Image 1 (spheres, rainbow, N blue to C red):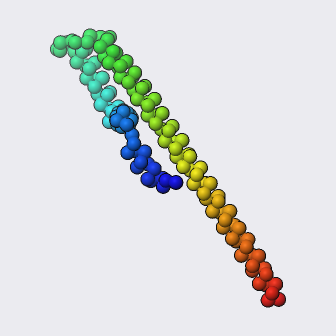
Image 2: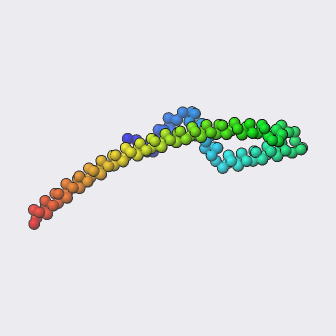
Image 3: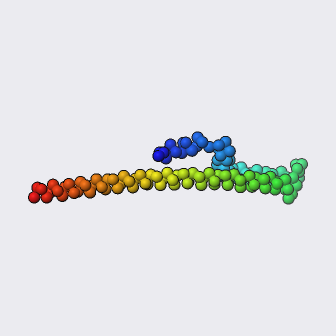
Length: 131
């Protein structure tokens, strides 16, 4: 059986380019830096397109911005599904590893319990012979 630390290294080494990219994008989109940058971008977009001193490339109601937001939402949904699928696979592999570890531990405990019983019987025999 694999040691858990080695299992994680092996799993990371076997990731496809798409899985690595999905993880990086998911980790980026799931950060406060992304949220703050996104809010700042939206505020600047709205301010520039609402201001009378700039040339408006996307007048209110910001149809181009809505298109970009819809595309971003579609991509985020797909990336989150890919990441969730990978998380499920990792959880299943870890659960299987835990199961095998538990089976081995149970066997070892049963062996130790049997040895302990034998020792107790031997001690009883020795005590009986001494008396």
